[in-house]
Image (tube, rainbow, N blue to C red; front, top):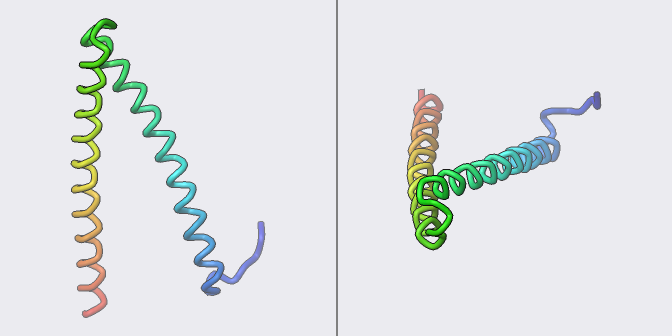
Length: 90
C-alpha cells in the first residue's frame, strides 16, 4: 500500500476525483442493466410487433425514473447541507 499524507490538498482532490469516476462507472453499468431489463419487460408486455409503442413507453418510464431520482437526490443533498451547516453553527 502506498503511504501518503491525507491532509495534502492535492491528494484529497485526486482521491475525490477517483472516487467520483468509480461511482460514475458503476452507475453506468447499473443504468445499462436497467436499460436492458426495462426494454425486455416492455417487449414482453406489448409483444414484438409494437416496437414504436414500446420505445415510447420505455422513454416515458426512463424519464419518470430520472425525474423522481433527481428530485430525491436533490432533497437528500439539500438536507445534508442544512444538517452540516447547523452542526457548524453549534
